[in-house]
Amino acid sequence: MKKRLFLAFIAVCISLSMAFARDKSSKKSSEVDLTRMSSTMIYAKVFDMMINPKNYEGKKVRMHGIFNVFEYEESGVQHRSFACIVQDATACCAQGMEFQLKGNSSYPRDYPPRSSEITISGTFRQFEENGLNRILITDAEIN
Image (cartoon, rainbow, N blue to C red; front, side, top):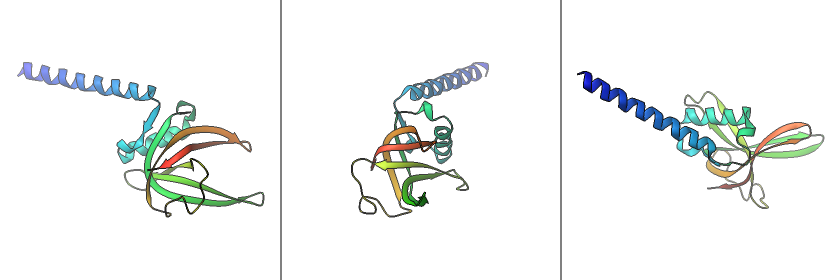
């Protein structure tokens, strides 16, 4: 009985150390693939990307979510932003990542219908625009 308990304990320790090793190697990776995570982990990771953008600068990001368009006016000029929205497991909270398609795209011709499911991939960027920090996935492609 003690031998089985000891072997189970060793198996758990090995599993945990392998999980931590995988997590550390993914932090060093130049890619953040949110499509392979649970909805709770995706929501948490996107939240972390918003809070700690320097940790993700220049990394390739791939995510799956709902396409949305935000139109607004600023200083008399019409603006349009495109986002991939993800929700947590209970669908009570949502986070979004704004993106810009690669190349010379035109809305609505080059974009999917609003509220459709999309998978995007592109490069995570943070920069200042008009005195505000902006976070964006640039050179994005809709897969």
